[in-house]
Image 1 (cartoon, rainbow, N blue to C red):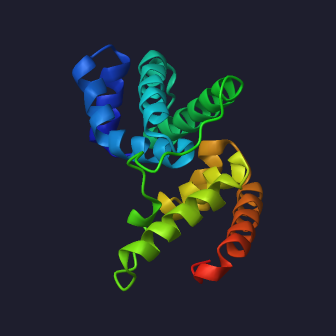
Image 2 (tube, helix red, strand yellow):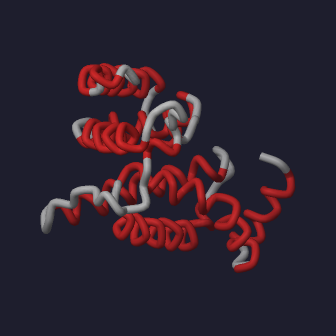
Length: 185
């Protein structure tokens, strides 16, 4: 962690709201993208995003510089997303909406495909991701969409690297089977 980032965190820990806003500004897009990828629902994601940064604000004084700040925030975001989904799944089942603003193929766009094929593939990928366990989906998203390293994912999720690799392997196997007709997996 560079000195400037560390200074900003120390100021935020001392109650400087401008420094806290700098932290939010630096990571807000990545955190929102992560939450959208896991929750797959724009309205829920906005609530989870807000709840995540409220927790970060309330707990910034507990950050001990044992990891990068973004790893710490990612862990809060992932746990907040799981808790939110668990709490709300008892009330209603939330299916992803086609107009949710979340488009997995923003990351896997094939310019040679026509728009109909692209839409079909988007739906197939989203359905396949829903077929994964929470752990498998989260590891897949962190690795392939957020492009994080296995070690970082392990730190975020508080898992061993071997467990992360196991979840990733199982996710890839399931996606390979469910998307075999598209030749993308």
